[in-house]
Image 1 (tube, helix red, strand yellow):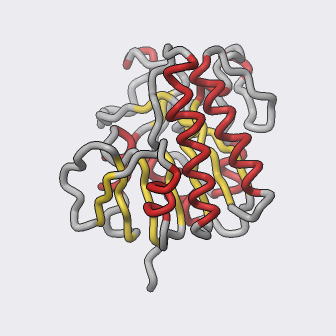
Image 2 (image 1 turned 180 degrees about the horizontal axis):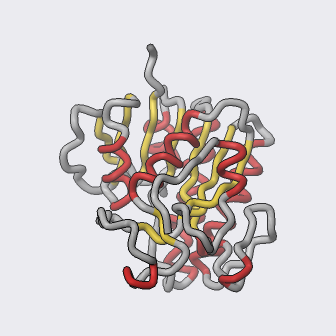
Length: 237
C-alpha cells in the first residue's frame, strides 16, 4: 500500500512532536521547523521558515497533505507579534500547498476562535466565529483562508483544538473537576485520531471541526467531527 506523504510544519513543537511519533509508521513524513528536530525516526527533516514563501514551496514539493501547526502560540500576544507567523506564514503555507498541487491542508485552528461564547452554550462549528483575543482572530483568518483555497480545489480541514494535555494522565475516569480541568480539553490520543481522520478522509472539500475529547458537557460541540470524519473520542470527561 502506498503511504500518504505528509508534511508537518512546526514539527518540533508540542503537538508536532506527539503527532510525528503517533504517525511514524502510518505516513511518509517530511518534518519542517526552524529549530532542530529530535528523534525524527527515519523521516525526512527540513529546516524551513513559514514566513518565506519559496522555502514553503520547496517544503511542499511532492507532498500529498500538509499539516500546518507552526504559529505563534501565545494567546495574549499583540497583533504585530502574531502577524508574521499566524497571518503571513499561514498564507504562505496555503499558497505553497496550492502551487505544489498538494491534495489537502489540515490547519491547526484553536478553541480561541470560539472562546467568546458562554461555556454552557456548547457552540457548534457552523456558528459565527467569536474570538476574544487577537490570537483567536488569526485562527479565524486561517479558517477563512482554508475556505478560500477550497474554492480553488485545495481541500482543507480546520481543527479548532481544545486545551491539550501533552502529558496524558492514565486516570481518565476521575471527574474533570477533580483533575482541575474544564470542559474544553482533548487528550493526546484523541488529538492524534482527529488529525489522522482529517488527513485520511475522502470526499471532504472543506470542513471546520471541533477538537475535544468525550466530555458530557463540552465547551464545543463535536457532532460535525463525528459526522463528517467519523471521529469517536476514546477519552471521557
